[in-house]
Image 1 (cartoon, rainbow, N blue to C red):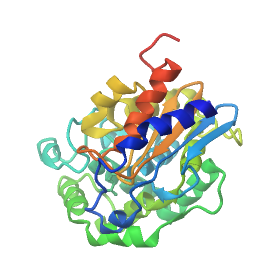
Image 2: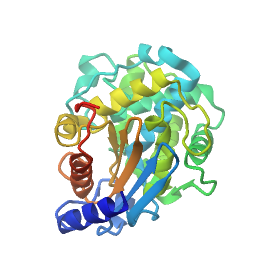
Image 3: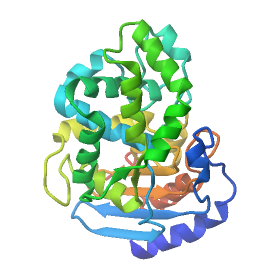
Length: 305
Ligand code: GLN
C-alpha cells in the first residue's frame, strides 16, 4: 500500500497547476495551490500516508457527511421528511430545483440539503458548531481539531447564495430556525481544518460497518452506514457523481477545499487532497489519484468481491 500511494502521487503530480482554486470564498484563494497528499485508514486501524497528508486544509463540503451522520444519529429516518436522497445532476450551489420542488432539496450533499440538515441539528443541539467539532474530534481521534475562524467569516461575508437557498426553503416552511444562525453553524462546519490523516480516520467507520476502527465505538448501524455510503456514491460529487462512479466507483465526498474522501467498504477509507479544482468544483488531481487507486486495487463497488 505504501509503494502504491507513493507511486500514485508521482503519477498525478504533473496535473498540479492545471486546476483552479475556489476563489468565490476569498480565504480559500489564499491556500498554497501546489499541495498533494493522501492517507488510507484500514478497518484494522492501520494508516498509510504519502505527500502532504498531515497538513490541515478546509474540509468544506466533506463536513456534510458528518452533519448528516449526526442528524441520522438523533433523528433517524425522520430526516427524509425534509429532504430527499436523489442525485440532483446540478452544481452544489444550484437553486433551480429548489423552487420547482417547493423547498425540498434533492439530497443532503448539495448546499440546500446540507442547510436543511444543519437546521435539523440546530433544533437538537444547544451549540451545533461545537457539538459537530467535538464529534469530528472523536471520529478522527484528534482533540486539537478546530475550525478556521477566518474561513468561516469569509464564507459568512460571501453568503448570498447559501442565504438565498435557506430563505427560499424558509418561504416554503422547510426551515425552522433563524436562517442567519444556521448559516453560521454551516460555515463553521465547512471551515473545520483537517488533514488527510484526520479525514481518513474520521471516515473509517464508513468502511467498517459503522464502527470507528480506532476506538471501536459504534457511530451508525451497519444498515445506516450502507445507506450513507449509497448517498455518497450517488450524490457525493454533485453533477459529477456519474463521472466519479464511472472513473472511481466508490462512495465519495468532495469539498471545494480540494479534499475528497472515498470508502472501500470492508477494507479502508481514503482521503486525498489537492486544492486546485475542476469545473465541477472537485479536486482535479484528487479525482485522478482516486481513479488510479481503484484501478490499481482492482476494486470498486461495481466489481465482484
Ligand atoms: N462552504 C461551501 C459553500 O457553501 C461548500 C461548498 C463545497 O465544498 N462544495 O459554498
